[in-house]
Length: 432
Ligand SMILES: Cc1cc2nc3c(=O)[nH]c(=O)nc-3n(C[C@H](O)[C@H](O)[C@H](O)COP(=O)(O)O)c2cc1C
Image (cartoon, rainbow, N blue to C red):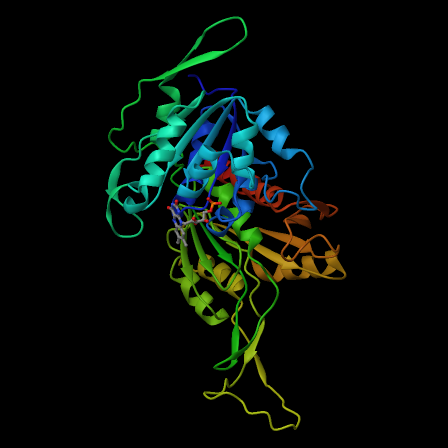
């Protein structure tokens, strides 16, 4: 089957292998398919919906009946689809498919779609071999237009060895491509045969461009005593969107992340830190091989001068905490670049979150920073900024007036930065 131009609905259920669906989505897009995603609630605990929304450039179909959901997504998505692909399929959704239960987006789409359906189970070997799962998979093999992929044996995420692994994303693509469709009659009814054999794990992942991006993410926590800290409300969603967009464009993505709620897509190398000083040190150690450095983290400007070793007792009297400035990581990187301690030709991007006098503050910060560009952003509206998927932003560049701030998704913000980096890299190449 040629996947080019196909509409593929990707159903993701709550197994540990859910992260592999991100890579699968990209591989399908590279074959020219258009992909949309629905997820069970359990799946959203393994991979953030924002990752799939970013990669598919389409809102994910989540919770049934949620106020923010479009009312007929459970009909619209399956009707739109040429292929419904459930990866990974948990024991739970397999049971629902077999017995006609439709109480979450993935099982509801299974019931309401009329296209070819492909199921890639993934679970622990004991679950895979349980009489219930065996029976349910056997039942599904007997359903019309339903294809159950065989799980290979191997090392499982739980540490055991046995059958129940998810097929590698490239193998799933091969399975679809090796499935031939023959028109049976003029009603467009299809007969499907699969000639696919589970074979070697293919190495066919996102085409790499040989470049590396280092991104700082999340917030920092500055200790007051062993149980209290100073921090801010950054959720880390912008860094997740940046990671997804750069990953999808062939970059190796490394992140130095402070505390945050949002989750990174599979394939991103994450180093966790807590304080601004730790983040500073971790970033400085990684400058030598980064082609692009993006300072997206909301780093605390100040930290308590003398954090207490014991919990500070409530004495009912006024308490003063002395604060000292944290190292400015962006300026530290600019200095390292000037002094030849960073990769040659490195692109440096800063972030400035402002709540007032946007242009004036951004221009001042940019000029002091030594960065190549500064992403000015403002959490002004109730539905934008911290914790939301959209934000008001403008890219500040040297020698150009600051454009008016536009309201857009965090993915479009990430794409603006990617475009700037690509143009700078192209200009450097031309000047050689
Ligand atoms: C860490 C963790 C990993 C899990 N991995 C799997 C898995 O690989 N396959 C599976 O069938 N269930 C797995 N489960 C159990 C499912 O998450 C659980 O059955 C859940 O209710 C499935 O919901 P869903 O099918 O609606 O996504 C896992 C649970 C946890 C906590």
